[in-house]
Length: 131
Image 1 (spheres, rainbow, N blue to C red):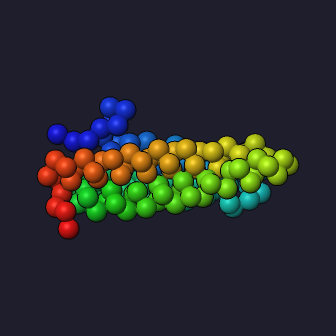
Image 2: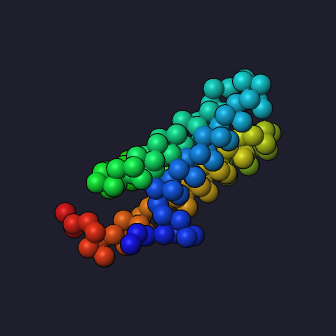
């Protein structure tokens, strides 16, 4: 028995969220004619999430460790995406920048929330100790 959000277990959710962020980062970099290395930030943040999700799925004995590492990157995504309102108020920002920050904020936020709920569920169900 494992925690599921939207019917998806957390390691798979990590792989999906990390994959979406990584793919968008590469696409944004290519779309922007490779003008800005910062377009790769979603990739830089999403890759460790996906790798940790894959590792958690492959090594159940280390699942807690990998999922805790992944949620740190999810939280960093959400925090980075908090810049979105400033970008929108600026008015002269590119669509790529807006989409990147919106993805960081929404995916990072929802993913972090799901991870916290998963950790709470595991503690309530006695799957992790309360140290």
